[in-house]
Image 1 (cartoon, helix red, strand yellow):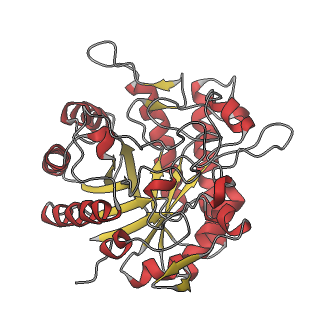
Image 2 (image 1 turned 30 degrees about the vertical axis):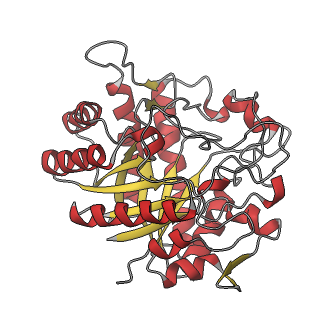
Length: 367
């Protein structure tokens, strides 16, 4: 089984002097993970993550040049590369899929052409740099579509509508990827990994539209995506119904509920106080995170999952200096009410001071 990590914010970490330790010794986190069997690097791709005045959106600043740097770093440390195209200038997820600023005002046909050309451009840039991209995601968490409003899935009607436009965009991305790397593996990535009804509707539509794909990608965060049993029932359904591999392309679990700024006026962490309505499989402690990883990987192997990728394991808060977004970035995605500092730092595989957590060594292919 493949183990992967998404460390797309690492260039910002290094620029601020982040340091990592294991057993009291300073380490390169990429080398440490590679020594423990991790072999895949997942890198998000944003079109133009800065405003028209050049102010950066932060969160990794994953424009084309940063992506190529991260991909070269990955190859130098012995990792295969997965590029995760968001087709947006900043974060996308099921609640937001903002069209790139440079594509605004274009009709569906023109946007499909832009998507094709941009995908091909980035992949060929990687190829010229000697990077053999193994996997590509055509969109990120596109359960409700992408490039809104053009490619949005309307789930308020039955059956859901919007698949014709979405599949036009997916077909354009697949075509570009195969033109750049004929043997590349295509991933279609959703969340709601517990929801068999949504996955069946979605992938039935893709098959009916003739969309070529190799891997069904799933995000799994139990805070939102329910139990192991529901996840793996969906994994089994997808494998049996579509004859495709399944990869858990995003995974995370909290190791503490304490903020890294003890005197902070408000809680910043996305997952901190557990929702009493949601049953967590393990406590949000260092040992609880380790136990979660151990069970996750055991079950993944039992259900013949292709791979599991841990999301942002190195994203240290750096005393509040590392931010998930800048003010211009928040404005672009219409999320201006909360703080900009790192909101994910309690789900890393290193503590706030950069010490490797027990879960890092559990996230391993070593026997």
